[in-house]
Amino acid sequence: MSTYGTFPGARPRRLRTTPAMRRMVAETRLHPAELILPAFVREGVAEPVPISAMPGVVQHTRDTLRKAAVEAREAGVAGIMLFGVPEDAKKDAAGTAGTDPDGILQVAIRDVKAEVGDELVIMSDLCLDEYTDHGHCGVLDSEGRVDNDATLERYAEMAQVQADAGVHVVGPSGMMDGQVGVIRDALDQTGHEDVSVLAYTAKYASAFYGPFREAVGSSLQGDRKTYQQDPANVRESMRELALDLAEGADMVMVKPALPYLDILAKVAESVDVPVAAYQISGEYAMVEAAAANGWIDRDRAIMETLTGIKRAGANMILTYWATEVARQL
Ligand code: PBG
Image (cartoon, rainbow, N blue to C red):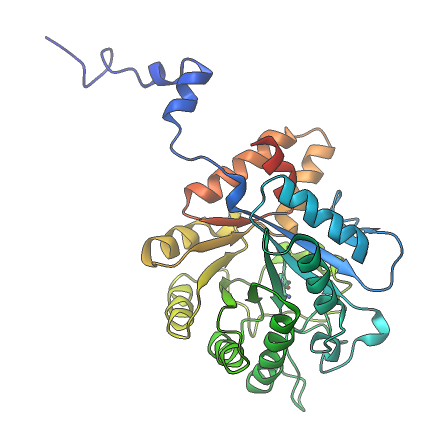
């Protein structure tokens, strides 16, 4: 009597016996062409500035940003997501530097475009928090609340100046209602029909953004809970997804990644546009900090987190390890 369907006939360990066997039956593979490097560029510095909460990541000068873009391209990375860090003196309540054609982000887009052209997908964060003196992602009303519709007008202007600078993809990350539609209209009305919108669709109010605040020199007091989502919610993400698709999102994103793999899997199952996941600053910091203490194997942990994110359904992954990992693949 055969027992092929049960032990001792059935032995799953047979397929784990050698590295070659394990490689052959692996269901998930990472590829450099799905990795996107987020990068910070700081105005008015002569040397890159280390970010203490993100060991190995810096605020680039214009020059070192160009070099980082070239390195990413040489490693086969898909794209670069740019964040501008203006001089403190240039921050104001309206985030004016975000719509200045010579603001740091616009300058950086032009620099990277001149350096790598269309060989990397050049993306830009479309949000006001890097440029406002209060640190919120939008402009405030007379009572100090983030004013949704007034913020949309600022986002429309940002979309135009970023597109004028030559960006391929804008990434609205402010979680204002209606932002994708307003940005799509602004792009279309200014001759930028070919610029894509990567919508931060499910973006949660997360403690894991902590190191990012240092990365962009943010002065935020309070929190973003009136515009970013409650970590407790799933259905809310499906509603945000439906709205973003109806407003014309070309790609959608879930953020953070690791604590929200269930959301990522659900979004990935239900759409026919590419899905991105953002492995954010705090996710990076956790692994680096534990590894620095000798508590985990850094390289294995990095690959395991990225494999998990891909397995859950991401087509693209934004990760601060993009260039390093692409070189290893
Ligand atoms: C908003 C923005 C944030 C991040 C990307 N875009 C910060 C926030 O929403 O508080 C976080 C990225 C990271 O933590 O790595 N401009």
